[in-house]
Length: 356
Image 1 (tube, rainbow, N blue to C red):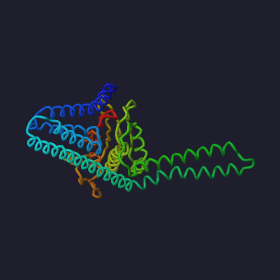
Image 2: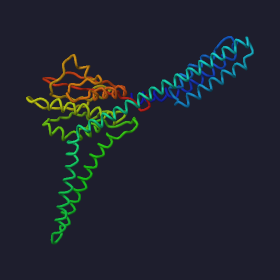
Image 3: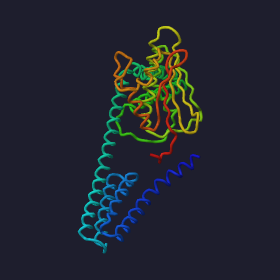
Image 4: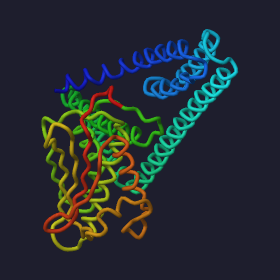
């Protein structure tokens, strides 16, 4: 099934330029063989609109210019009809083609601006989240560094023994390398999430991304005495999208769930992170907390910008999360958990890399 959809997607992308070319040729022939009073060249507008699907800005400009050239050429080649009426129709057609090209490029620029603004806002939200997790991140990094120091001192003692214990020293050095790699992995995950870069769509292992995100919050989970459970489906299909942005959504939901659960004085402090693929069309991620929960009339409002239930909250985390998920063709929502708490879930469609 996936191969068929991939084949159809590739065919669709390759057919569009051919369709646009055939349409342009057909319009040119029609405009040339009909009377000058008939403004057939106006149909070039459709060719310009089709070009948006497979051309960048420069390509759309070239298509628009080519359509204008064909319109002028057809005017001089047409033998029947009134030249004056033909000239008026030619000018009208050129104006329509130029206006369509201009509007298409303006709309495309506006979309790019919105996309860049959303990416900038998402980056700010990531940095803000890291500010809230500074103590936990510092503790997480400090653990392997402290182990490196401890093992380094132990290695020096083994070397100064008489005779030197080479085997014990070797084992100590191996532990140092292992802990240093662990610290490097933590710093690398933080750097990747915090870096400011243009969104990059790729196919990646979603479960691996979830585990990396959980690793960044383990100290926060332990500090708040929250019991974490994970249920990650083994045969989960890979996801196509921007890994960093989707990881930010996972981080936002987990951090919110930790805070909601930790705020409860009595009862269980349980947190469940789950990934599923209940059908062949979407990958699902959910966070189940045992916090105070949400009133039914607020389940949808929590994703609105500037809406927050925290005294010190900005109300942007969930709004940005919804924007990111919807930009990937998915949806995000919240439901009550039983016996208490809330469930935040989002779904991402399984799609091929070539599908826009």
